[in-house]
Length: 411
Image 1 (cartoon, helix red, strand yellow):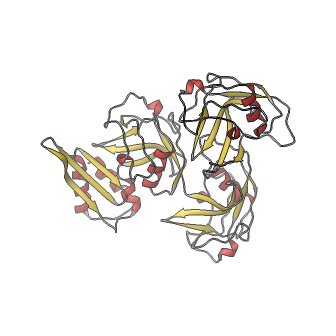
Image 2 (image 1 turned 90 degrees about the vertical axis):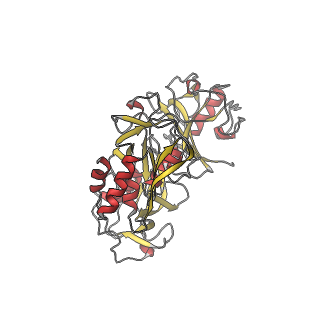
Image 3 (image 1 turned 30 degrees about the vertical axis):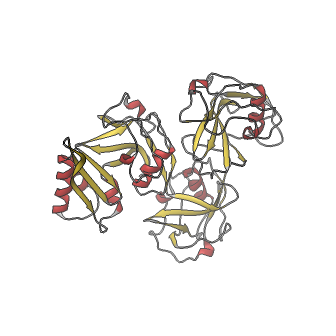
C-alpha cells in the first residue's frame, strides 16, 4: 500500500504487525488524524454521531520522526525544515491551498514535524507547484493545535484553488538568545527534542554568515566568542564548525558529530547579524513588543507597499485616510529625509495575510507609524486592493536607510 511503502523509507525499524496495522487502518478508514507519536483512524457511521475508531495507537518507543512524517511532509525546500506542505489522506498525497494561510498554520505544521517554531508561511507555491489532490482549504489554526488536521478547515478535498496557490512553511531549529535586538545573540540549535549551544572552537565570520542568512538576514557583522551574550545551559550540540560561508544551514557545514565536543558553556558561540533584511518570505523572530517595517514591490528600496511585522507575521496597512503625512513618517522611520507621495489602491501590488493598520492619521512629526492615531491592531474594513504604499525622497537623514526598520512600542 502507498502509506506502507512510504513508511518503509523511514529509517526506523518497527514490527511488521504494527506496520501492517497502521497501513490497513489508513486504507480502510474514512479519515485519520496524525499527531506526535499518535495515529487515530475512524470510520463515519451515519447512525452514530460519534466516529467509530478503526485504530488509535500510541507508542513511546516509536521515534518522533516516524510519527510526525506519517501523513505530513515538506517538499521542494533546500533543507528538511522548509517546503510545500503535503498531506497523505485516503491513499494519496495532496497539497494545502494558501487561502488564509498564515504564520499560525505554519507553527502547527512545524511543531507537528518536530521543529520548535515557524519562521514563515509562504504562499503562491513558493517552493513549486504540487500535483494531484488539494486536500485542505481555508485552514484556520490558532497556533496551539497538535496537528493541522485538528484546525478548522473546509471539508477534505473541497476547494476553489489551483496548485499555483499551494501553501508552504519555513521552520526554524535555530535561535539567538541574549542580544539587545533579534539579530544578535548566543546561537542555539534545537536537536533531538532539546535546545543546545555551539562551541566557539574555530568559530568565525563564515559560520556567522551562514547562521544569519539562515535566519533571514543578509549577512553577519561579527562572530563573537567566549559567551559574549551569556552562557547557555544544557547540551552543547556542535563543535569545530567550519562553514565556507555559502551553506544554506549551519547543519550543512563541517563539524564534529552532534553532541561531541571538548567545551564548556563559557565557550558558547554568538553572532551579530546585519540589520539589512534579505528574505521577504522569512519572518524575523521578533517578540510582540517589536514592530518591523519594510517596503515591498517597488522598483527600488525607496518605494513600495508598506508592510509591518507584528505578533509573528507580516501584514499591510489599509489606505483609508492615507496621505502624505503618513508617508513622511514611514519614510523617515526607514531613514529617508521625507516622502514624495503616498500611493493608494495597492499601487505596488496586493499583499496577503493580515491587514494590521487602518485609518492611520499621522501628523507628520511622529517617530514611528505605530505612534500615529489609528484603529487597534488588526481591526479594519478593508481588502488588500486597498493596501497603502509610499515613495520616499532620495535624500537621507544622518542614519543609513535600510530595508527594515525596528521600533519598540507599547502594546
